[in-house]
Length: 448
Ligand SMILES: Cc1ncc(COP(=O)(O)O)c(C=O)c1O
Image 1: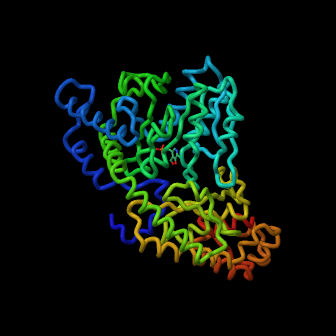
Image 2: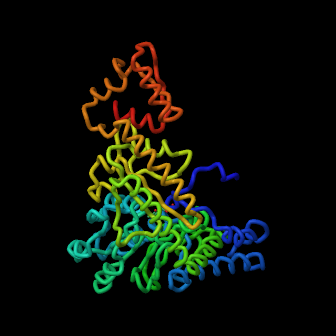
Image 3: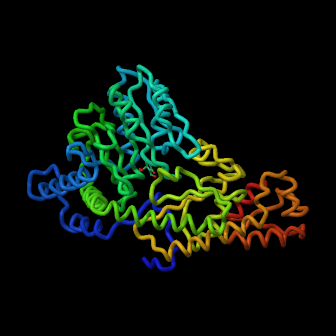
């Protein structure tokens, strides 16, 4: 693929490309080594050895024993297995689970399903930096609390939680502690003996391994119900013929992460800080979300007042690929649950952009992204979309003149073109504007 014409990728928290060394390690398992790890012959033994090597590589990164690593299909399955598996294994000991309001849906929705099955869940609030208070965890503990599940680092704002401090609370009380480390593995240290957790989830595609592979660390001796029934793979904990190819990829990615954690971390942080500094210099009134003292080294969540993040993304889509902190559907703006829990005011939250740097990010990438993003923010703010909260009718009249909403269908090749079209059509009662999605439709949706 010719990447020279693609926008600069600043969405490494969504997913990462494969590391070339990961591809190299995987290649033999695409080409020739196709055996089933359960087979007794040399094809099988080869595949089995590859999975075991990968398991040891993951274990080295986490500083745990290889038999404490269970391969899964990704972060989502690892979280499901950890939470549901413990809830079911301990259901006779208690029904109470503690989590936070800013978890990934792969945790929150598992908890919600368990509530429907009769479990009780406490969703802890966070402070304005997105941090869960250790005292709040302690206050939420009950005699029937069986599990705490708290993410290590947040995928949207990057805030890193005080996992070690919470682990001290759970250890003395015999409560199982799970952390979703999908975003932190490979970016910050994730040594199990330091974190003190009983279960930890990994998502391969966040650390330069393929999609569709992950792992769950399960502390030796911890009783946990498997999600599925089948044959005895993964020590009976995760049945199904192993994904040898992807496991090899995850193992290699973990080995690289372990070897170069400090260098990678510094590089990602340098790029992120250059991005943050550059944007704040050009748009000083930007708000930075997340805990700047305890944040993933690659993550920057910024909010621009009064603009719509979807419009901003559309505006920069030829230059920069990033994510929004709010989505707009049918005239409704849905602000992310993370920003809502952090009490980011809606007029800022709706203009939130998540930018995340990676190993491949260069200074030239950052400088070009800063220029594009800052220019787009200024332009959008100059359109006056900052007045989105004023009366809808007033908006309608200002932009469309006399046209009634039901006379208008939408066309949107590009935000600016769209706005120009809208403005030019406003005085023409016969004109109709068709919009096919993107920034202007978002803007227009807001107006309807
Ligand atoms: C914090 C967090 N947990 C879990 C997941 C889900 O991982 P996967 O995509 O491997 O299922 C993600 C992915 O976005 C994530 O960011």
